[in-house]
Length: 191
View 1: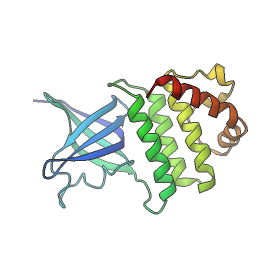
View 2: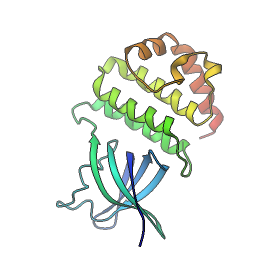
View 3: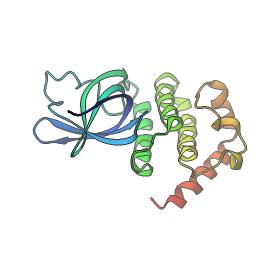
View 4: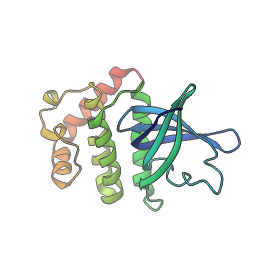
C-alpha cells in the first residue's frame, strides 16, 4: 500500500500522455518541484480536470510509486482568470523560469510563497503593475535558489513575499538595481 501525501501545489505546466492522461510539472509546498501523472484527467467526468489547469494552485493528493509521483485527487484553490490574458502570460514566463532553474525535489517554503503570492497579485493588480510584479518575483526566485543575495541588493524586499503597494513601490524605485542583478544572475546560470 502506498502512502498518500496532501500538499498545496502550483501547476507550472502540463502535457498530454496517452489517451486521457496528463503529466504535470508541479511546484509543491512540501516537496518542491515534482512531475506527477494523473490518470484519466482529460475525460469529461474527471473531478481533477479543472483543479489542475496550467498556472493554477490546488490542494493535491500525491502518491509516490515505483515510476514516480501520481496525482490521486485535487481541489482548486486559485485559478488563472481567462479574461486576464496579460496576467496569465506573465505568470507563464515565471513558471517557465522556475521549471528551468529548479532541479529535483527540495522543499523551499519561501519560493512557494513567492510564487503563490505573485500569482494572486497578477490576478488582482492592474496590468500596469504586472512588469514590476514579474521583476520582483523573478528576483525572489533567484534569491530563494541562492543566485542573488539580499545584501547585494540592499533592500528589505526579500525578508517577505508580499506584493502589496508598498513592496511594488519599493521594487519600482529599485528597478535598475533589481534588473541588473536579475540579468547578471540569469547569465551566470548558463540556461
